[in-house]
Length: 181
Image 1: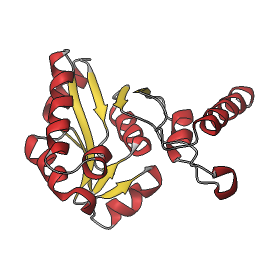
Image 2: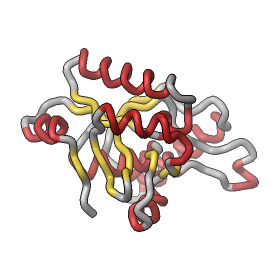
Image 3: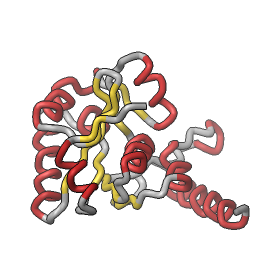
Image 4: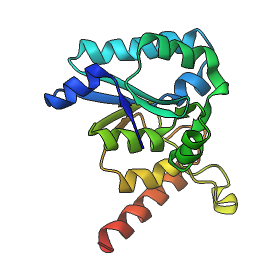
């Protein structure tokens, strides 16, 4: 799989500079245009103001991109829901079909790790959906946290989810992982 890494991201990684990965689902699926573009640019500016290089991640025309320029950010913001919400399980399909993907936490972690970015910042992670004990609707973000070595800085679990069951899932998942290594 070929991944396009923006030159400033590649330069920072090569010199062991600070790089922060960012998801793109919030841009395409979280807010309407133009607020989504304004938010994306403000977040990138905050990261730059604190001495790091932002690396927003998305799949554009079947090619994963780590680090987007302003035109690419604008394309995401304007296209919105035309970009497929892309979790790790969706990556192969989006790439193989030449599609456009807005990366979720799990896909962003996957690509960040592939190129050597150790830190990822997001607003909220996915979790166990309400009535998840019946539907088994559990975000792939949770399993990705346990298998991909990227530090995730987050405000926590999204409030629309079943927070107690999400915490229960995380505790059981991590205890299982610790005792079965």
